[in-house]
Length: 168
Image 1 (tube, rainbow, N blue to C red):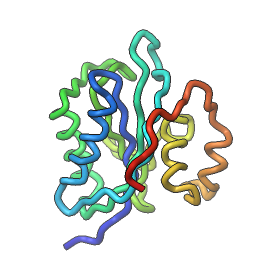
Image 2 (image 1 turned 120 degrees about the horizontal axis):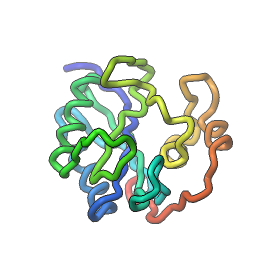
Image 3 (image 1 turned 180 degrees about the vertical axis):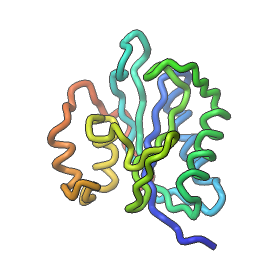
């Protein structure tokens, strides 16, 4: 069996019953082969990035332990997205039933056409950084700085915790 890695996954939804979808998606992630969910953050509501003519997003972050390597994990996450009705219409930052992003995969860096780890937009996304900070407050980020410094630099305007985590 492969070595297991700690992986942080960002979750988002702004179509359908988003809070139920995110909770169910965390369960689905935990059901992947050789994978278990270790922590999940509270749920947060945030304004959409990009086009504002869409509903607000509900976001969360979970920490998993998995033996899946990065690309097979991505494929499994995309299957979960598809099973929840995710449609990829080419509209960047458009509405979606479920969005699952690999944020960090151990200490690995990946830079391929379909996967970038650490996630390329993390530093500017309070809806990722705040939930990540909630479950990993002492994390040192890939640039060598504490996660707390990243959080201190991002705008928290429009971000609101809506449901405390029940799994910590």
